[in-house]
Image 1 (cartoon, rainbow, N blue to C red):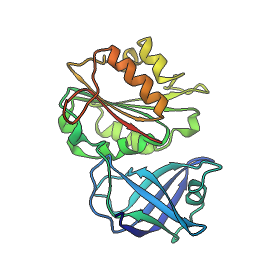
Image 2: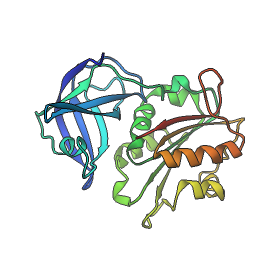
Image 3: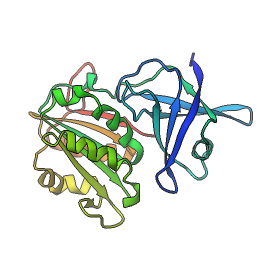
Image 4: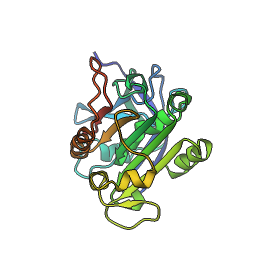
Length: 247
């Protein structure tokens, strides 16, 4: 049975019209970077709940959730409107296996995300463990507009701290943005542009890939990676591609 507790809103940061981050204070049990929780609000007598990954490191004092407001959604518009000192329900326990403990050894770790699926990767990147395990970490974040590139100060701080290991490559599909690739991740993988841009190839002997985000992107990228000889990572059969779909 799900154990729900109250979380107090410490901050509700709006990145743009729809993207927002909730900073919460709640006495949850310890979690592993990459796991998710559930948030809920009582609406018309029913607890409406959705799953959200933690953005913060497990040892952070406060909890952080990165989300998008779905205009006609039941829950996200109300979360988007929460004010400081208001409360939201949260599960005491975290869930999921999208964690480094589930990733086999490799030289390079590719983190490929769309939209708010950047969240679990930020949690993982704040752990020393990832930098001890992999020589290079390549963070790919795809959005529609440059205004959707949230958490840039945190990403830049990570780039500075791990300048010899972290490579960051954003994609912006609907406008030109300096430093970003245009179009879709699948196109840049198919024509080799992504590998040329970051300076490394995707191959079974050196690559581990974590895919998180839009289910269509996840499906298409997984097929492209299979064509490169990478296999889906399963607990019973270790491979190279670990997947988390975001809705």
